[in-house]
Length: 261
Image (cartoon, rainbow, N blue to C red; front, top):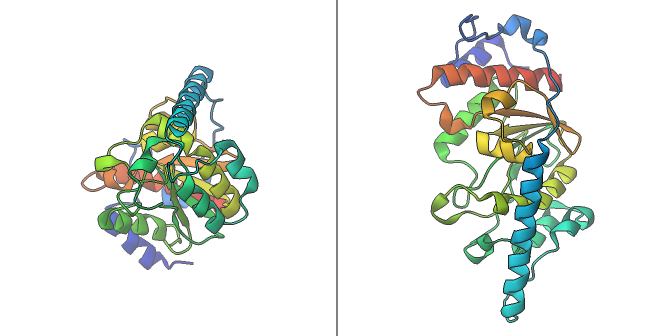
């Protein structure tokens, strides 16, 4: 358990003040157990239908490409079977390295599976890798401070992403690319078996939760992914120079702390 002095140092490093701010409606630390968990609404069916259409189109395109290029070195994985048949993270990594469901495999230098404790109670998910890593050094330092403020550490959580391959010029991943990687992520979640998932950033939150709602509407609610409680929050790159956003992240972290006990 962190001492109060050490916890305050971590919060100070994030630029977070812990007193009550009525304008932001932030509960004080002493009343953190009063934070309510509100079950999110069911995913919007029209959006889900659009996602299904996109992934079918992506899979069809890959099948046509493989038919016309029979000498390709890639052996596309049946995305529907991945979650059912992998027995370890190393096996999943091999499957992903052979995956050709989307165009990212043509520019892939290496698979970015994730990192951290394989039996983590908390799993943190972002949208896509940045090159060969999930976070820049600055963002990783900020994430470390966020976690230490509630008694966790980068070595005790597991970091992952919706997309397992870097995108060209670090562009935002396409919806079809994230859909093609969905079963890779679900297999990973089943292997890690976290108690809570924290998803960072609006794009990643919308995709994981199958919603078009803005992050403001997805925060402060308990969602579910494969039966695992999910809490949406801001990405570390949104925090520097934004004290109001940091306070909102602190509120999100309190929810996770309460859920994990």
